[in-house]
Amino acid sequence: MRLEIRPVLGIGDVTEGDDLAALIATAAPWLRDGDVLVVTSKIVSKAEGRLVDVPADGPERLVARDEVLAAETARVVATRGATRIVQTYHGFVLASAGIDASNVDKTRLVLLPKDPDASARALRAALRERHDLDVAVIVSDTMGRPWRNGLTDVALGVAGMPAIRDHRGEVDPYGNELQLTQMAVVDELAGAGELVKGKCDQVPVAVVRGYLTAAGPEDGHGAAVLVRDAELDLFSLGTAEARAAGLAAGAVLPDGPGDAPADPAAVRRAIAAVADVIAPGTVLTHVTDDEVRAALVVTVPGWPERATGLILGEPAAPVDPADLVRLGADLQRLRTALAAEGVPSALLPPPAGSTASACLAI
Image (tube, rainbow, N blue to C red; front, side, top):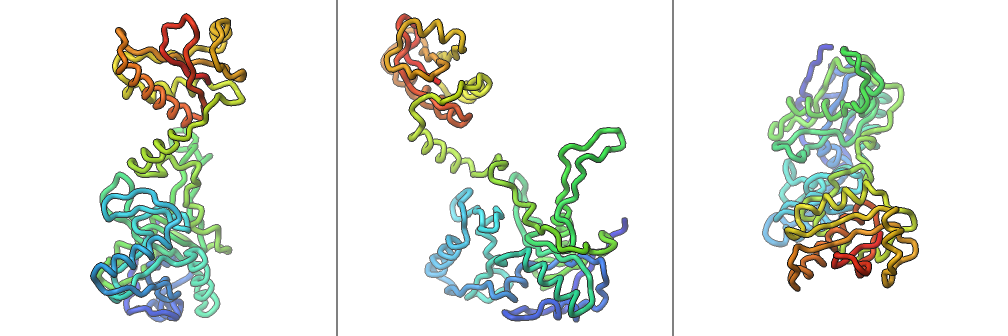
């Protein structure tokens, strides 16, 4: 494969209502079928009228910008000082909901396109129907990446090609079957286009030639397939936000064991999760189902009938009142860790004759 990346020069400033297909086709008469057109989302937003008026400066501008940000935010992910990482209604997680104040009049802000996939499909259709060009279209924007310095362009919308190249089921040269590899090729092409567009050169469109031999016959599923499902997102909150959410959840923990027996592996993970933060010398012992039957020979006051397990908490010896207070805090930490594993619990007095000072029923 040989790739060629070319800037589209001469498009000029884009305003609301402009015909992007005509502007691009006029500026790039050399376009041909199978090219991948990488279009900066800002000119798409401008053409679609996705702009808001704000004061040029002063505290009023900051207030107005915060109001716009709130309107574009579906969920706050992390906040550090003036920086807001949020999830937009599209599902994208990025700084300030993608709101941009560059390359636009000082009294205006540019929002992301309302539906970037629809914008890509419309531009592709216009180029095909009015200019006899069958190309793929990527609507791109600049984003940061967790744990990586620097910015790169990624795809917000795409039409005419798959967003992901799925290698699962293929066999590598060493005979290993690929199990997880799915390449976000449209993000890679968006980043390639940025190499010739730049931020200050007023080149909002690039063409990648050679990746496709022909655009797809259908528009495809778009870039929406790149948005990770919430239940699969292991890093859905910033550190401080996750801690706050955990404390809030800890304040309303379920007060009772679950209807099904607790998974011993989940209980072990919960105990391990708090091992480094509990008071020195505190011992937490998980009593298994068979042992519970023997322990329940001695009646535990308030024992929930459906409980199938115990976790006994024993502070360091000798015991003083401060140790008991710390043990109570440790058990609350453990209850939070158990809840995170899907194991509800209840705090009860220990069985009679036990050396433990408190116990959890699970």
